[in-house]
Amino acid sequence: MPTTKPEKPAPKSPQQKAKEKQKDDEYLDEALEETFPASDPIAPPKFDDSKN
Image (cartoon, rainbow, N blue to C red; front, side, top):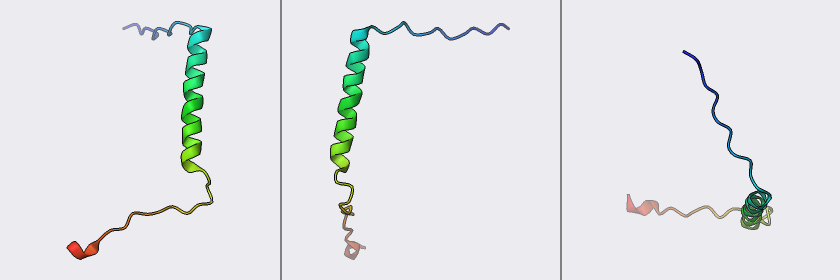
């Protein structure tokens, strides 16, 4: 049985590439904002064990 190669996606236009890069940059900026400053300790949730 012959195997077929998967079709390659069509090349992206410069506008599509720029839009994807902008979206990636926005995700990275948001992730950085969510983790800054890294020196702050985390705030673990408090569990109420008295309900058992």
